[in-house]
Amino acid sequence: MTKIGFIGLGVMGYPMAGHLVGAGHDVTVFNRTTEVAERFVAEFAGSRQAMSPAEAADGADIVFTIVGNDDSVRAVVFGDDGALATMGDGAILVDHTTASAELALELGAAASERGIRVIDAPVSGGQSGAETGVLTVMCGGDESAFAVVEPIMEAYSGTRTLIGPLGSGQRTKMINQIAIAGLMQGLSEGLNLGIESGLDMDKVLATISNGAAGSWQMTNRGHTMVADKFDFGFAIEWMIKDLDIALDEARRIGVDTPVTDLVTSYYKELAAAGEGRSDSSVLIRRLRADS
Image (cartoon, rainbow, N blue to C red):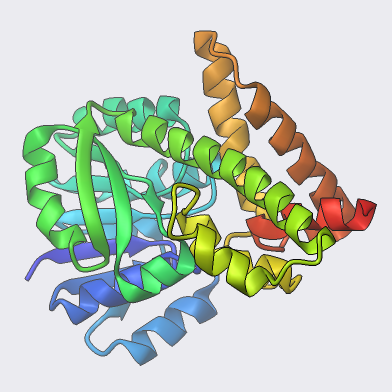
């Protein structure tokens, strides 16, 4: 049993922390909305609620964070009420937030002054992956720290890979989101062509998903895109946040991203039209509206 502080009980963090309790770990949770933390400890016997990030981290061997963005991470890690204030020498901070690579380095520098190691570990797989415990975790940091946290993360993930030093996990997540954006736009255009052609889209999807065009997006979102259903999944307001991080990094190192620039503009157009909470597969709605 490992003593764990878990900070952030959103649609991803809530089931992830639940899996840790289910694996037998000693878990103390903090969430900005206290009602969510109260519901968690009522649901997962043996867990405890903290009233601040510092309280959740006090005496923990590992502290996990999964919040909104760079500033959200800073808010729960730094300061008198932040996790670093009470984490002890030898503890490990694992940040599952999709954030910038620069933040990972910032966390690492601040933590090292206290004898604390950091792993940046953004995840992929969405809410369903968190609930079923099959997330993909992309990690950056020290090999010895990863060796400690890797078996703990197994409770909620199917794959856990140390890519390289701090920041490597975040940069890998940027690649992940860039690939998804391009795939989703291509899938939207292809499905729209099929719909406008009057094809049986159930047969189309069953056929091409088993070939070279097959993808997670096609298998898990193809039918709902055809049915014009988007009230679930990974909200485009979060996709925009992730893509902006990736584009900032690309500009910083001088990498061209023409397709990602374009698709990000499409997502922002949809968000401005009130689709901010819709699943990222809502890209097809732009094309259907124009047809």
